[in-house]
Image (cartoon, rainbow, N blue to C red; front, side):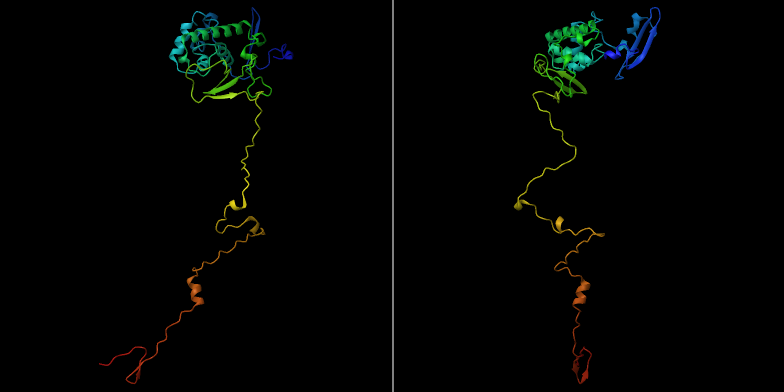
Length: 302
């Protein structure tokens, strides 16, 4: 929140404003991204978690210390076959772990975010349980004030994906990268969070766009352009039959002149051939037999 907005009430992006009497309390629900929901439940405060939607959620790592044990976490991880990051974000398994908390927990536990949850050993699960308790409890103790978070947390440098001038490494020097699988994005340190088991196939690693050691890629136009290739004179393709070069085409003036196809050598039409060479009728000489002229037919006498 900016300093000039600190004294403004209700605060910016408020969606729900509640005031009570005796004692007088004013509460505002802010949601700039409009992801949240508000549900009013008529019940005593101590039984609020027995009503929907809280009743469907898993135990809270801070509040439900007795329920959230190492054995509970081990049981949940053994029964599922999903990436560990997806398991942490599932509110039916654990309450209150969002995207940045999940990334911080896995960084503190040195676990690869896309490794399957049922591929971790007992010692790794114990380490993960401690990391969850540590990150969640400290964030609550500091009331979510990120300026009070430890300086070596990934939280301070994980927000720069695709931003100009973003920090691409941890204070200790390890570079950061992003993984996207199943619609979930995870920030992690590959040098620290190494794979110790199976991971989701087809995972694509996306380094920070503005890496200090890597030049920024040039933008490519979406227009389809063909590369210009120099062709030697002897290598130019032959023209097809009846194909006319661009410089030989007639200029367009009204109608386009179309050249008439040449007559084939033996393709003269029958009519034209008849006119050129009129048919000559054979001449039959009259024959004379017995002193009489016949019209071309001779009758032999017996």
